[in-house]
Amino acid sequence: MISDRFLTFFLPLIPLLLLAACSTTHDRLLDADTSQVQLRSIQSRAFDTTDKEKTMRAIIATLQDLGFMLDRADYTLGVVTASKGRGDSMQMQVPATLRVTVTVRPRGEKQLLVRANAEYQRGPVTEPKPYQNFFNSLEKAMFLEAHQVD
Amino acid sequence: MNRILRCRIGSVLLAAALLLSGCAAVTPEADLSLTPEMIQQRQLQTRRFDTTDEQRILKTCAALLQDTGFNIDESDAKLGILTASKERDATDAAQWAVFIVGVFVGVSIPPDKNQIMKAFVSTRPVGTTGKQVAVRVVFERVVFDGEGRLKKMEALNEPQIYQSFFEKLSKALFLEAHDI
Image 1 (tube, rainbow over the protein chains, first blue to last red):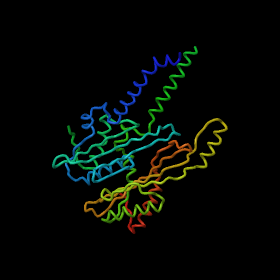
Image 2: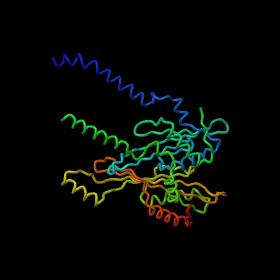
Image 3: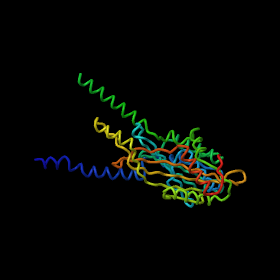
Image 4: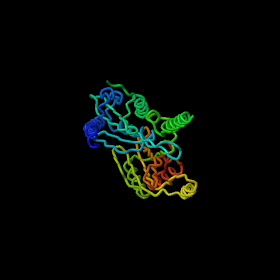
């Protein structure tokens, strides 16, 4: 009796559940739910310089100013990853970590494109404001204006 | 009557949960813009040295961190960076006293057990003629309780830590450290 009910009600659910798990992993791996083009524009700025070393040093200095701890940096690839974790469970502050990867690559002959992407509490940061704040801070360290790119 | 009470308890719990979630110590909105406090921190954590040899400063920093028990995690001389970490015991006698008292009154406050201490050094040539190198060091720590649960993540901001680091660096370099 019980096995009959199991067969009719629960068995069809199992492939459905499996399928659901599959698609969510896939969605999260490639973050398919956000518009890639829009996000790229939010996360990128162009600077009128070709000095990669100076730009990367400015990025590192900015992240250090913002209280980030450096995780990884590679000049050849033009990649800097840093994270900022704060919190004290004893003082009712939920420990949270903000992680940022910044990449630098040439854009045309005279510019460098800086792209930042942030991750916060197991999710991507997709709002424009945090990126604006970051590039405002970076502008000060670069002594150069950050240009919006399409 | 019972229902109203349950509703009230529910809403209080919900409010508490909301408050708790609102209390995250880091948020993308607040933590990517510079504040005057951050600039102050920079002054505390930075010194200038009269040299053009940035590499020598990085090497000396690496040696100094090694002397103090750190392991080097990441370095790039071209970018002037160095990060190091060490794992240490975080047992605090006062916390254990609180924990033992807590057990008797039925409150469990797990004491600190382990900590990972991290250091991040960056160097850069400064001055109009590039005759000086600025060194900045930042220390922070992550604390875990006996069960391996994350308890605390904090920047170490005591001025003495930085003063003593730069005193040692200055001695090792045979150079005087200037404030920025």
